[in-house]
Image (cartoon, rainbow, N blue to C red; front, side):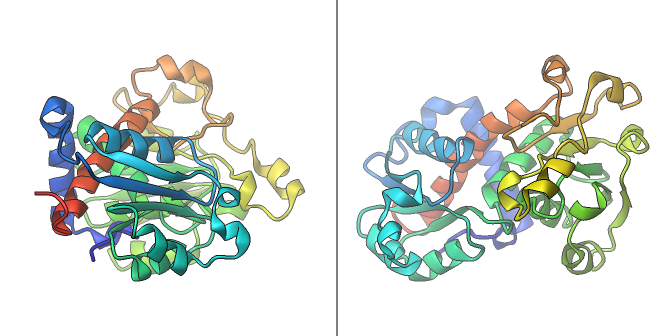
Length: 308
């Protein structure tokens, strides 16, 4: 049974096909409104979420399907000690496809190995978040029309940011990528991402603590929040949480066609004044997330033989 746990579970060609379907959904939404009639998506969210959970639900409803599930672990039998494997086996009896978010890395993979329906990883700890990456890729395609020869700056929490790790993984397969890593020393990109992804692909990258020094070179600026929930020490979080705040003043030297992205939620790392700037793409990412999840649900249900 085909599941998507990591963005690398999808080939470059498959990502291109998903983006093409998503763009067709944007252009012709009525043509897709009955594609999943009578089918059910289970949203198993063991960790809080607004955009991802509602995006999956909106995606399934707009395909004509139905949704069941829970939005916190305490609402499920996990509170009674049920294993992820047993939850996956059980929910497979009720639903045609599962979207799972879990605080523990690897939990959706365990679910996929035990479910009898497709499982989509909706985020597992600091590990992977493939559908956010697909939303990011659709946004980049719609803004830049290509994934090649881009200089992409990742700013903020690069240590725990699963969206950063996944997007670097995805973009590493396209030629001409340059990566600029902007973070405090304590939140630098993990060495394994550099040694296992950037270096083998021959990708040029630099590390810096200064956003101002590099912003003029960027085609895309991918901002992230410092994630309180990933810290063991509150003092460390409070010391680092305001490391980077993007303001109109800092954009003075940026390119006129810079794309400013953020997986959201935003705390204060992007000034609300920037929301009016035509370069701001983060709410476009939110909408694109719904369309690309529609495309992914369709792909997995077709491959499972559940829909035509």
